Image 1 (cartoon, rainbow, N blue to C red):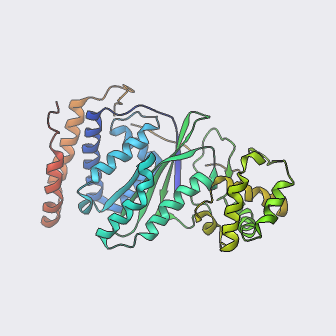
Image 2 (cartoon, rainbow, N blue to C red):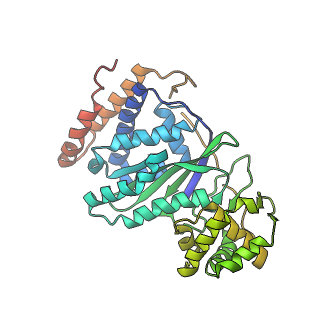
Image 3 (cartoon, rainbow, N blue to C red):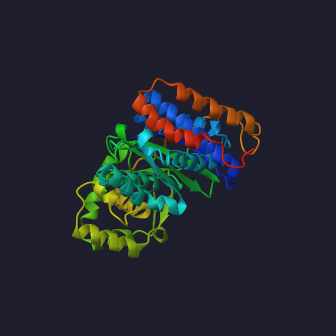
Length: 362
């Protein structure tokens, strides 16, 4: 279930090295407290909440409103759990740009140590990214994908897309335990004040379009291509004009030949096929409307929140003394927590080493 998303201004700066080191240490303490009090599944639930995630990033000291909060906070969480995954009960994979493409490899590697079947998790990672980049066409191209999961196979996703046209970024949150279907309302809509033009192929209203797209994908490719050939310009109500130049006909033909040879049984299976992206789905949706009269939904989901000092001085500069005091206070509180002797020795041994200030830090 996608639990919502935030819309943020694009940010091209970096967190200074000293601040990122502190973010990792504070993130580790906060996550350790949540696991101690509520368990590792609660961490997934919190990370999947766009409001909580925004507040968490602000507490760590990043810009309260920018896209950089997403990538830096996810990076801090990934570093925070490194080496103590077993004690915290969950793992982190993926990241920004080329790192995001390594997510399946990281999942498989972690699952080998957990004796856990990685296929459902790799599938969840890939499909959640495809839904937000291809099936929900809102003008934002996914460039960041973080995948969090437990040894029991529960998972959460935080991913972000960029729109150079608007100069903004959108962050999408998913929670596996609430997911009913990847292709039928996989998210809970969060209203926003401004809605752009959107093609939502996973809305309930798009069910007939999905069925028609699967039907077209199983047809002889020439029949579908000829339908596109006859129409120089298809204009869909309340969404983008689509020209023939928008459809890579050679690529579409190859995809259709592939689907014709091995017909997909469902829209989810069609969406999961390699090579089937936003343009292929849009072309099938357009032809489906032309032939069957089915209209895809244009309903959009969005929004956010905040909270500790930011690296750019908004709402005030990060106070290093207070930041260090916060980390130490949380660490002492965890040290006094009523844990079983066995759990305490296992968890705190590692946390003690991580809690020490970095060499040369003032």
